[in-house]
Amino acid sequence: MNRLGVARMMRFMSPRIVILGGGTGGTLAANRLHRAYGDSAQIVVVDRDDRHVYQPGLLFVPFGLAQPQDIVRSRRGQLHAGIEFRRAEVDRVEADASNVYLGDGSSLAYDVLVIASGASLLADETEGLTGAGWGEKSFSFYSLPEAVALRDALSSFDRGHLVVNVVDMPIKCPVAPLEFCFLADWYLRERGVRDDVEITYVTPLDAAFTKPVAAAYLAGMLERKEIVVQAEFATGEVDGQAGRLVSWDEREVPFDLLVAVPLHGGAELVARSPGLGDELGFVQTDPHTLQAKAAPNVFAIGDATNLPTSKAGSATHFEGETLVANIEHFLNDEELEGSYDGHVNCFIESGFHKALLIDFNYETEPLPGRYPEPHVGPLPLMRESRLNHFAKLAFQPLYWHVLLPGRDIPGVGSQMSTAGKQLTAAAAGEHQ
Image 1 (tube, helix red, strand yellow):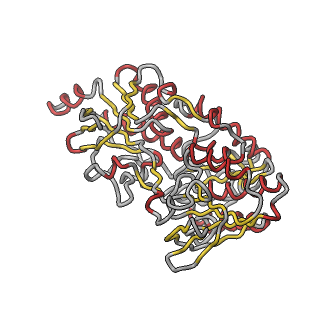
Image 2 (image 1 turned 90 degrees about the horizontal axis):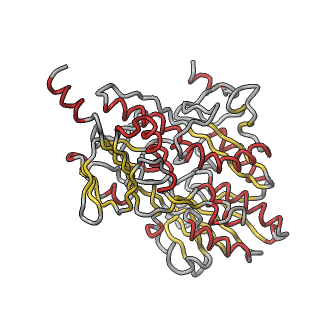
Image 3 (image 1 turned 45 degrees about the vertical axis):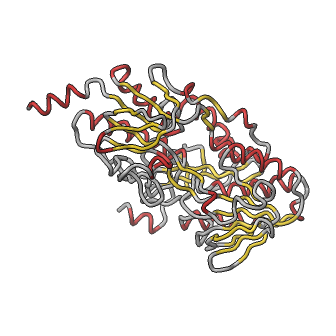
């Protein structure tokens, strides 16, 4: 080994790995790394607060299906002993100097940096959204206070026009707005007021979902539940006082209660860090290795990335295996593996104690079949079932006790398998 190689080996005998963000991605990455390195690596997780929210639970709060106190835990409490948790604001990253600068003026040097800073809600970017009517007839559910406020508003809403509006893509959990429509339909029917409420789903997409097979199935569900779809609607303004959405091409959708999914962007620290983010503030990331474009010793995971796949918790879970493997490869001066294939799966609550499951990756769209294996896979794909609903409910304890601690879920691989899926002719051609 040459002198440079020896110097590198000595430097990384006890590496410092800094992780920005104590959410899903940052927590599972820290715990997986601790399992790999033990006390031979110094692992530091930085976040501005100590409140870890189980984000899938936010969808249930407005309908009284989850209580706020049941979906919040300490961030520090989810980290293995030996991992340092530092509560601080992050100002910026200087990738060229391998330094993180904190809001109090101090800095953290690192050998490896993991950006797990998630996505930010940019409600103020849409004209009028947070103006007149915000918190009174216009709401969101992507944070806990907003979900609670919406719960209170829905409890007395018994007639009029309920509009669910996706302002623009990308967003966290792209199916969540559709789930909200389905759950609202169920909730209002249970209260006996559904006939007096019109529900409209307003989306900038040309269909209910981005993938053709799933879009067609979901469109049928929306039609059966008498939920109107207003597609290709680019929201330019929200007039809360008059109760109307206005698109850039001057179309209008009236509302009595608006559930808005605001524009999403990356964390502000990314925008302040030279060369780290794209125009939306998401970290420019290799889609297969999860290495950031800014520097070889910087990696990214979860909603913070600009990967061309859904910003969903399952994607973050599947990315974790590749992320940790490639940090090990980097520290060992080895070639990185391009093993992440964009794998995502999502349970879509459809109301009446039913849900459907979709499973896809960069190359293969959601398809019918069984999951996780053919014939013996207990969960039907692209079909409503009670079993899928109970599986979604069961995921919450799995989240706290398996996913966050950095363990694998038995039978669920990080790479998507086509086994059990009914390939369409087009999809089959992709795999020949």
